[in-house]
Image 1 (cartoon, rainbow, N blue to C red):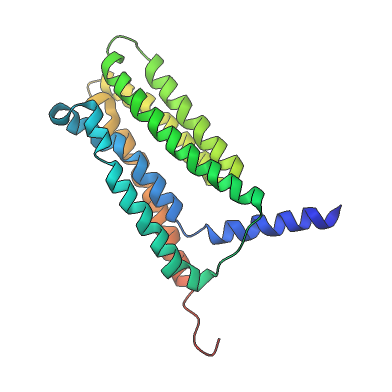
Image 2: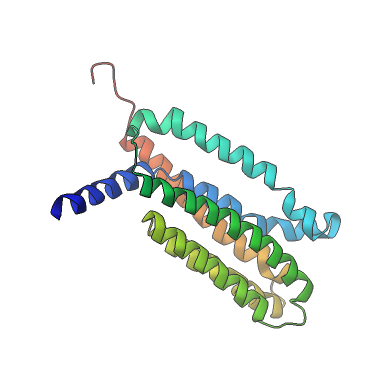
Length: 207
């Protein structure tokens, strides 16, 4: 019984090592950035199009991250073939990101419409959805920092609503709170990427 457990632990360690380059973090932070930028565009473009306009940007960013992982990360950290179970978890994480983003856009629009009369219910539901989505992703791919990101993202709607009610921020506080949350996640990702580059230089021809 010890061998299968050891293999699973070895695979988990290899997966964690290969995905500690910060690229996932940069992508997640960029996705959350929509809630900081879209409210400022809603008055000119409408709630729907001010959110949808970011989809091409995410597509380009995703392709760029794939290219960086192949061209910059793989030569330094190598690559690995993971089990079907691990690959299935990765697909689930991708699906979670898509679903959370889609639901968040819909709920974000509803908050802008009904938040003025529904009190704290809408931001609380929004925050809970983000916490649950990030927590499921963290569990499935063994990426514990996603729990922290989920907590930061989940607090953002409630903190923004409080700031809005205190007349300290506009647009239900989203530009401020989600701007800080996405900024923190992106900076963590950039820091991890720089750390990876410093501690994993390209191998020489002799090596």
